[in-house]
Image (tube, rainbow, N blue to C red; front, top):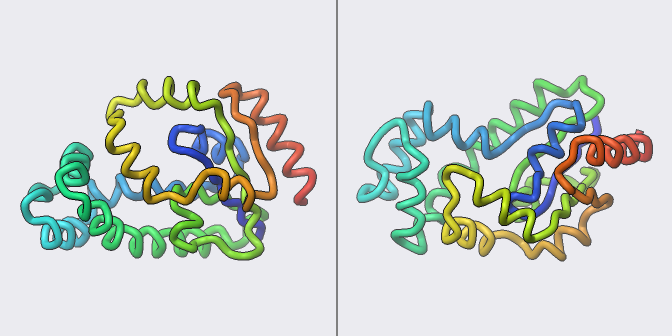
Length: 189
């Protein structure tokens, strides 16, 4: 099985590109959302670690946002609790799809948390800064402070780009993306 890891900046279109491959995608952000909404054990752990902030189940994104902004150590505490669970879910996803020819890992902290393997094919999604900002501002939960906090815990984009075997230039048009993906798939099959 070929494992493709999608890298790039926040708002660069990683999830869109990942889905465009047409193979099973493990989307870590979606999984985190499910944990917040449905996993009582995660709530209990977060409530214990951050009792002033995480007080209601299901956990709302706004609550997480306020927690991260309230204290510089909050994000680290949240990550310490959430990431082992995401890793477990990813392993279940990989086992479930082991007969597939290819899977796509859409995990924002793929390199940072050393989730990738040596043989993984890394693809960097490159987008223009202005386009990224325009897209981020359209998100209903857009918060520049939160985005900056997340960027601080990520490896530099130049490093991620160097680590990647392929670069997809994202101009946010479907046909353009599909064409680049087709070229990549022809090279790796």
